[in-house]
Image: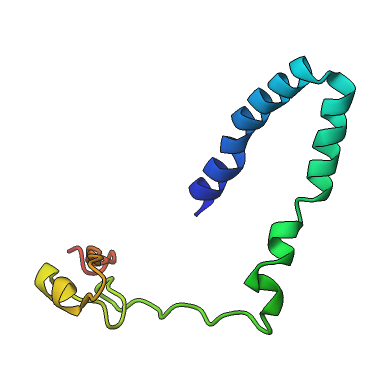
Length: 104
């Protein structure tokens, strides 16, 4: 998740740089700074109008994994995954966890 968040946040830097350069060259420096300031002040609006505001409590955490590395209720074969899936998404099985005691 950390890599995804970094990609989302840092990925906007080049887009903002290009947009700022275009606005700065067409409108001038001062109007571009004002547009950026107003845009920063309005950045809370997507969260304001999202379902996040209606949350009363934190969602329950996902089920913990079993000893073999699979999640409880997770299909163990590709055929099980395809049979259990209604939307065409394939759930891949994670390899089993090996502890130092089991590796001998």
